Image 1: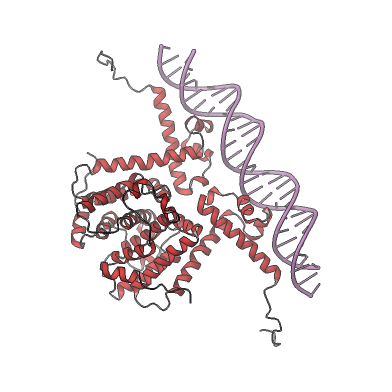
Image 2: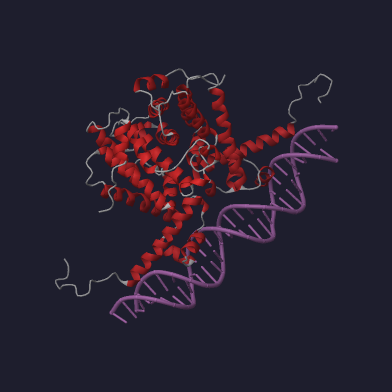
Length: 229
Length: 229
DNA sequence: ATTATCTATAGATCTATAGATAATGC
DNA sequence: ATTATCTATAGATCTATAGATAATGC
């Protein structure tokens, strides 16, 4: 039921609303960074508003409480990412490649947005990890692969557990040591550890867990990565 | 330089010291439970003293601050468990069985002491997971297995990542659904998921990741579990 | 005129300490 | 007499709100 008149001006979003949205989004970003670092309980509301450069009282125009902004973060960070992944693999038909793409994109995003990654690691388990966003995607994709006999495995729950845990831990490793490989702790460095190419290595490892052979797993993990069309 | 006289009484620990130790240990246990649930930042010192049934001021006889008791928890919970595992596998020679025993005992302890398990899951990544307790044990044991050609793998870092992540995630699953399998979320139940025998299934999965065949992995995961000698 | 943000503040909560009380060991 | 715990409390911090200010849209 749109106006019959051709919209003369493209009816840009009222400025007030945009202003409000931007404040809200600044609060969310600041909260993500702080809560990823210190956990929900370790962050005070005034820290958030200061980091967001927003008046203290404005917080309550957007969120009822600390718990409320935390819940909003979970939605924002996880659901939205699940949808992004779904879009990315829309045209990928091989279940193994679907998994590989999801794993690699997760690690790449964690590298680009460390706070997001840290939040994912911190909340990935507790927040019913298997039921939302990334976890749900993995579960469904693994299931598809099992049904089509692509993954010859027999313990679906343990496979989801292993794949999910491997990805989260890989994110954690990437965040701790990825940005400055020089700072690998001595115990790890001495063993010749390197975090080079972690996304691909994680994808290959996960595919092996799902029953693929070494050579095929590595080949799939190296395929060109589809980006957001 | 002990007294030359044969100790008539076996010199029991002075009562005052024992009293002090007990208070300290009640504080630690209360803190473990509360911080496992809500994270360090979400717990107030008076909550801890109340849960421990200890006068508020006594807290400061034992710990300087919340950060201090938290650090003590990390030591207590992780280092000590690493030592327990070391004792358990002292007489086990097969690296694969060593891993299996460690994994199963970790899951069994999480079942017996849910707060410990929840704390492990919450802090397992951040607290330099690969450098202490459980993580360090796994790393060393995997390394041994690689050197002795027991584990035909080529990416040691990813194997540690995968094994560690699988164990932590399995603990998380056990805690969420283990005690009351009736409460599995619909999405999981419908798929025929069950958490029966999770310790053995986790051990088998981990051994497969390390390159063992399905049959052998399952056989090792079912061997009799050594207990504390 | 309306709407969003900002400043100021009352009241609640939390931390850290000082001094009192109770228990132990001589 | 010594040592550990407990009670009480000052001061700091945090939350939630009320009322003032600034910006938008008519």
